[in-house]
Length: 184
Length: 184
Image (tube, rainbow over all chains, first blue to last red):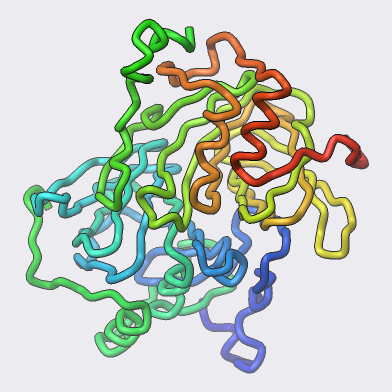
């Protein structure tokens, strides 16, 4: 269901051009934006660095409960985790290098700046909002695949390892497969 | 109720230092952060430019239904409006200079970049999240007043005109008292 736009790939997904691509005012309804599937999660870009002089971008993630996502760190990207619905356990390395974890409920907020290892686990089906240093917001559609369906009720998209590595390299981050977390 | 900390003002409000002031990881529970009252609204800074190399800051606003807030524009600040609860009518000048308005419900999103006149009205008691160009997030505590109570159930803080003007000047914005909106 994610792939109808491939019938005429020159057009790209129907959401192409939904964001203005420049600092102009606009409004999106819930579900509108640049939607992409990555594993079983729906990522929606509401705002990109193109609209903010590359200061920041904003995404939402609609995610079913599941395993801990792969631990990673960003070289230059600051990242926030605001839980709107559901429960999410955030794992992060703190400034002393200690491994921390925190169960975030609706209204709770986490911040992980550039350079700190982190991961998360959706404990109960969740909707999160993230603000990211400008440009990183499109990582999810590059590692995942565009979809015109703003729902998680569609087939998952499982990237192969080269695709994962290419998206990580493009967005200046690295996976840390040997990193483990207490309580994970 | 907003002013207990004035008994020992050298200490500032109890939330002083709650944000790390540098790019370090942290978590806030709902209601935690730098809380301030401005009129009848509770503004909470969850993240400031100090943590993001001045890229962006994040606030929440808990606001009772009321009148249209004063129209204004920012010279250099990009600003988002994401409705978590309630209903908010956003008024904004679009790229053609036309006056637009849009009623935002939970999950809806608005973006107003630097240089565009805008205002909003809380139509039903609302909770909003805003991401702002780094530094502007503390405008609300400068025009308003710090409080240690994370609730709107406390006396409003009504700034006098010199305080409003000082905060606007400090944060590089201007009020546009002659600007009117259709449907307002």
